[in-house]
Length: 360
Image 1 (cartoon, rainbow, N blue to C red):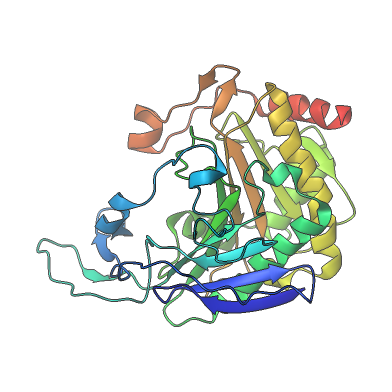
Image 2 (cartoon, rainbow, N blue to C red):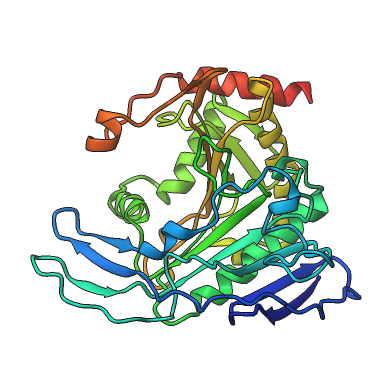
């Protein structure tokens, strides 16, 4: 793998990850860009003990340009048009988001009154382009390309974890207009948070209180493998299963068989084994209803500075589609109270997904 670091016209960092060592990455960004926005403002909610980012500059971010590559800012540049990627072709690219929720470009922050503390939204937000092919998707990537994406994830996890002020690194992909994407090109994002996220706090709190024989996450994996009912795919290093208490109509968790805190800790063999299993699961998602399945794919990684011995790297994949022409909307119970009601039994979801994998 070749790793090349360069800068865009407004000073943002861009990193190429290439299969070939002879890849030429000398192209420069020719665009006259506006100055970078200042970092968001974090405000503390004393009722939930959570930090909320106020990022008004994100209102102006690019929103669903024409469906073809002609207007896509994530496609390679050409003689006629400059994009976020100066090169005329690429394998995998990571760059700082032009409209970040967190950054180190600080502005002025004032006391807002009440009981809410205010501080700068220190951190970093990055975009990960999985392929230069606008019409592709993660499910269509070759095993070698998935490996390269994993190398990029691991690289960024390690580097961002070493950044001052960063407490957690989150790699994820949003797919489908129903999910709320603003760009259709196959890509994901990485958030380097200045705090440990609420979901991670909740899970690690449960792991700390757990009185079972081993690590809570490891015991969940072992129990699902032993039951087998909800396992949809596995190999020598990974298992994919529908959790018994799934919140979403179609939800799959993918665990490595070895407890590691984050992507950077995976071995070469584990990274290689992930690719064919994960793309098979994604293809099963698309095969359920004969079309593109909207989903969120989220890597759960250990916080940078706390509870790393409790954490267990795993991926959570879920869709809001519950039937061919029906979506699960988060209405009163879910949105207001955080109390989920699932419309699809996990065992039935596992059976449906397993049948699609068996047909491949």
